[in-house]
Amino acid sequence: MSDQVLVGKTALVTGASRGIGRAIALSFAQAGADVALVARDAEKLGELADEITGLGRIAQVITADLSSEDAVESICSSLDFDVLNILVNNAGGNSFMATTEKMRLSGWRKTMNLNLDALVAITQGLIPRLINSGNGSVINVSSVAGLRGSPFMSHYGAAKAAVISFSRSLSVELAGQGVRVNSLVPGWIETDLTDFLRSTKEAEAGTLSRVPMGRWGRAEEISAAALFLASDASSFMTGQELIIDGGLSAMP
Image (tube, rainbow, N blue to C red; front, side, top):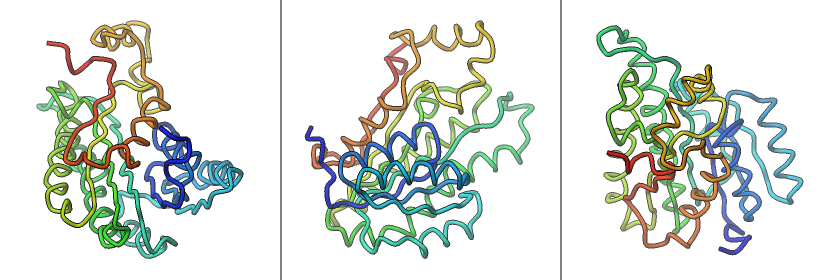
């Protein structure tokens, strides 16, 4: 794939201040795109924006908490790009583990709001700009937790499974209008969000025991897959899941 496959294109990446989102935003800029960066941490977004402008690209910082409905509306109204080629819905996460019996419904709702509701809302708001691009790509970041049973994380697994289902449905709705929609499905990636799985050597060994490649994935390995989905290299691909998990989902 050419190094400059996104020249002339615009992108918006949520959860861009760290981990997978940061890696995706930076890889898009390196490939020639101008990028809007969305997250809560203004300082980290500013540091990333400096890197992107140093590459000769435009970087717009939008500080927002996607769990707020008002924030989603603000993002859509403040975005400088009238035409949007690429939307990466990466913001999300999981803050607790619990059995379904013991889980509080407030925790369920919070998880759904962050991982699913906000994703749907920002996508709704930006669909017109994606259509106007004539060549749009929506990349919704799910998780292997949404592909199989996720004991003690049923809330998170359900939210990520819903992301995949939503992406498939939306892909059919938008296919005739020049917009592709795919899910990017990471496995266990070494980021801040998976620190709790490395809290002890036993916890880490237990996690990696289910990964045939026997290691953590890197954020850069996910950003490479996102670049494929954003570029014309995947121009006939929509409504699909691109799984990057070291073989985890292939395990019986």
